[in-house]
Amino acid sequence: MIQQLFQSLLQFFTTPDKDWSIVTMPFMVLFVIFFAIFIFINRRRHTAMLAYVVVFSLFFAYKSNGWLMLLLPTTTFLSWWLTDRMRRKEGGGRKALMWLTVVVELLPLLYFKYTNFLIEIFNEMTASNFSPLSILLPVGISFYSLQAVSYTVDVYKGKFTLDVNLLEYAFYLTFFPLLMAGPITRAEVLLPQVKERKPLDEKLIYAGLWLIIVGLVKKALVADYIAQYNNWIFEDPTGFSGFEGAMGVLGYTLQIYLDFSGYSDMSIGIAAIMGFQLRENFNFPYQSLNLTEFWRRWHIALSTWFRDYVYIPLGGNRKGKFRMYLNCFISMLLSGLWHGASWMFVIWGAMHGVGLVVHKACKSWLDKIPNTWYVKIVAWFITFVFVAVAWVFFRSSSVDTAVTLLNHIAVDFSWDYLPPFVSTRLMWTLFLVLGFALHGLRKSHSEKLKDWFVRSPWLVKLVIFILVMQLVINFRQDNVQPFIYAQF
Image (cartoon, rainbow, N blue to C red):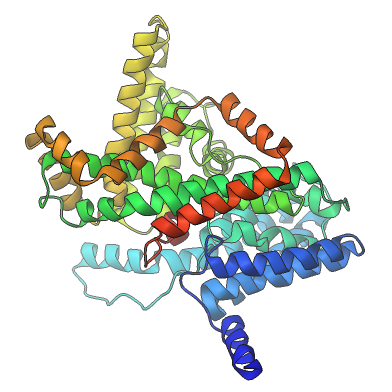
């Protein structure tokens, strides 16, 4: 019995798991054990606490990536060492060292993510037939690479001036709640908290628990459930009616928001339980009245990263309107390409780039329109439809699939399908309506609900958590949907 238990534990700690994430039951159980030890160490030795979290984070990376996780500590050391050399250097060589560091930080990402895409482009341009390489994309590499770049650039520009040792930087770049799908966190947000030794805050712990519960509802309950039907639509766009196709598009629009914002909520919640406050990554994006507002609310960490490290360095809006439009388009094109090495992501980025340019070009005219309630409804509807259509290209495997689906919706849409659809897929429809209804809440209502949970008795908290876990278990699929953004 003891030997079997030992072998099971040995297998767990030595075997990578492609389904490993913060939403899995093995992680939750392990985190409870980890957190109990964390509390004990955090009260006594700050340095030991940092080392303990770094070791656990590297184990988390190993479970996700196997031995590819060695890229993470390697990138961490080189990024810290080169940036530290740059910090101490004076004169013209400082800028060259900054660029060298950025290239070193981005090289693994460029190789693992874009090599085969470049081979594909080369083959198309030269009619060659080079075979793609067998390359596995390390989970989280897109996120920690950009986080490392932001640190180096901020140190170079003097925006971040704290002296950071290797252990503190390793904590920052390997912090396990952020590894799989961010949010991308700036040095100015996390590192000052890492350097400060402070006791755990009870209110922050309960606020973190609330975010974890919300994230579980979003991701493990609603997003995973509605994903089943959405997948059928995108795999066979003509196998269903136009109305059913439209429901699949609407479902995916909700799914990708709940999936990614749910992960962000859980990530921020776990960090909060450990005493670290991170910035929000989503702010009810589907309430946006224009595309510019959408990108201020959606994946805030990524949109601000591209604003600060691509759009503004290109010139931002300082070099005339044409350059502003071009810089905006280039930033969105690169944002699309960051999501994946595929023409579909390039098209998605280009669509949003064009949409943002059109909005900026028409802004002076749009500002003259009275800001009445029906104008807001029209603005919201146009923005939402544009975003939903763009998601079709983001999700589809090819341009033909996306165009076929949209065309099928346009020519074969009928409200007559609504009653039988609701009757056949009642629970799916209820989840869809519930998801969008909750998204329609005001932020102030959401904050009040969180404050109520924080102030509620521990028994109420326990009942809510158990209820959510029971719902997740009851509706859970045999094959849990992976986090959508984990693949990027």
